[in-house]
Each structure stands twice: as C-alpha cells, then as structure tokens.
Image (cartoon, rainbow, N blue to C red):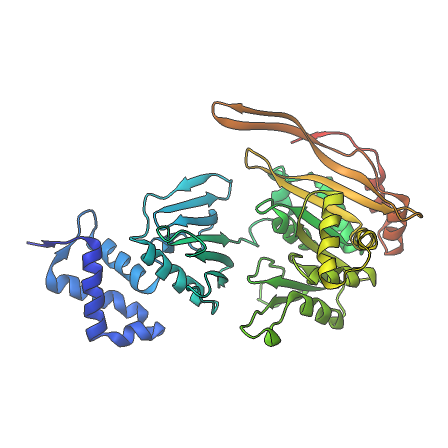
Length: 439
C-alpha cells in the first residue's frame, strides 16, 4: 500500500536523495531533464503518494521546485497573459491580455520559498536580490521583464513583491489595432506615413496603455530598404526583423539592449546607444522608452535631422513635452522654456494611448505641436477619442465613444512631408475634414 505524505515533506526527502546520489544533475543544466527519471525512481522505490496528485503531477511539481520556478512555471511565456503580480508569498494575481485579473488559488509555501524562486528567476539576467540589494530588475529570454522587491523594502512576513511582465511583440499588427478599436484605419495610416517620411513622434501614456504595442505595430510598416536602429533597456519588446520563406532577413534592422554593470564605468546605457546609433547611418532611430538621460540624446538626434520615435510615461501633448523637457534637464539643465521648445521641435507629434476602465485601449489623442514665431507652443488635436458614456452596469464598466478628426495638420507639417517625398495623393487623404467614427 502506498505511503501517504504531504508534498513539501516529499520534496525535502527527494531533494536530499538527489543531492546524495545525483548531485551532477543539479549542477549541470544539460542533465536537468534526467532528474525526472531520478525522481520517478525514488517515488517508485519508496511507494510514496500525495493526496490530490497523480504520479505524473508529483514528478512535474517536484521538478518545477528543483529546476524551474515552482507555481509560476506554467504561466511564464503564456500567450494569454500580460502580467504576473506576486503581491506577497501567498497572494499571486494574473493579468490577462484583455485586462481582467485572476487570483491564483496556489501560492508559495512561505516568504522564504517565494524569495528563493525569485532569486532563481533573476539569475538568468545575472541580477541578485538580497538584504544588501533588496530591489532588482531582470529579464528572461522569452521577452519577460521582472521587477522584484524584498524586505526590508516590503514587510518581512510578505517575502517579496514582484511584477513579471510578459511581452508579446509579434502578436499585434496594424490590422489588430483597427479591429480591436485601438485606432481607426486613417489614424494608423497617418502615423505610418509620418514615420516613413521623416516626422518624429512620441507615444505617451501610462504603464499597460499600449504604448510599445502601438509603436511596434507602426514600425512594421517601414519599408525593408529603410535602416532602423532600436534601443531598449532590460528586455526586448520590439520585434522588427522580417524573414522570407527561406529564412533570409529581408529588412535592415539593428536591435540593441543597454547593459548595466556593477561597475558604472562599464555600463552601456541607452544614452550611449543613442549616440552610437548615429554612426550607423540610420533612417529611423527608435528608443523603446525615454526615462533618463537618453532623452536629451534622443532630442538632440531629432533636432539634427534624424527621424526618432519613442515612448514616454506622460499625459497627452503638453504633458508629454513637459516630461521630455524635465528628463533633458537631467543631462543639460538649460532654461526650462528652451527645453520645452526643443521638446516640441524634436517631437512635433504626440500620440496619447490610454487604457479605459473597461480595459480597452485607445489612442485618445494625436496632437501636433506648432512652434510660433514668438516661441510659443500651440497644440492642434488631429485625431481623438471622445467618450460619450462611462457607467457601471451590473458591476461592470461600460464605456462608449467615437473617434473624431477635429483639425487637419498645419501648413508647416504639410510642407515637411512634401519635402521628404510623400506622394501628394497619399497626403491628400489626411487633408480632408473628418467626421466621427464609432468605436
């Protein structure tokens, strides 16, 4: 008759057995797959069983604890998830792609167990979290970004707080944006025209508003003969390399990642990469997100005639340029009004993305910044989403609205596009007065 035992006691016994007899399989990752056979042998030799588990489930669960990431393993890399939030060792929430949140019934065994698993996750990117360094950022190879905190930053009885962001750069294309109501066909076509013909822009919005998703989709419209240089920090969110049916790369893309180091002298920052990108003769420079001194380098690159696109955590129009100017001040603290003017000149278009209360994402505003002869900034909303209904019905948010086109582009933007080669018939589409589109 099988000997009944609780899972955690069995895990401890199995770990001791494997450590005594098959230690090499724990040290050598190439031998990790053999562990399942060793675990199976140990269970059969001792006739152990755990209530609620089949033999296969016991083996898989023990293997996850020893070589993978415990209860997080099934969710890492999931195509249906946007984020995994560990609020504490006994509180894990999953954010789905549609914005809904599901609380897991499973949790870690203890605060220390949670810390141990997160340390293992961070090890992939060479990052350490401990009492001396209680905050760490890292990534996994499959476009997964990790931000972790442990005590004393969080309470000792909670163990850790972790945000694991699962990125799906190739999932969304221009057609998806239109079909899901993120934007209209004319709005996406307008942005594609701008990036193709040398008009820099910045996508602003909060976390999870769809900034990088939008930028990634727009950049897929860039012709193959245009040279694109992308710069990101921590993990790869942009996926622009295209191949033909034989596997040959058909477009002209350089993807780069910044590299932090324990020794600041060996850091390779986003700012360093922006400067380096200009030596690659790029047609388009994409800074995945401006969050520090790289903002000044991006503004300088744009002001010297390069097509620069990026994202920034900010509000629409004026707020985005205010944020850009503040970031530039970190590197070169000149007169603030001058920084604001430079921000408006460097990024004459601001695209504002937002996640509504019903979890749908929308482009709420595409504004053009016009610098007047007196140096004032005037904002012209070219496209926007107007909310007509925002209510709670049967416990759920209901949001209705429509896209409109209150203004057409300025004469200066029109001249710039013509100068950079946009066909007149293509441009004419965006010079017509607009009407509202339900969405």
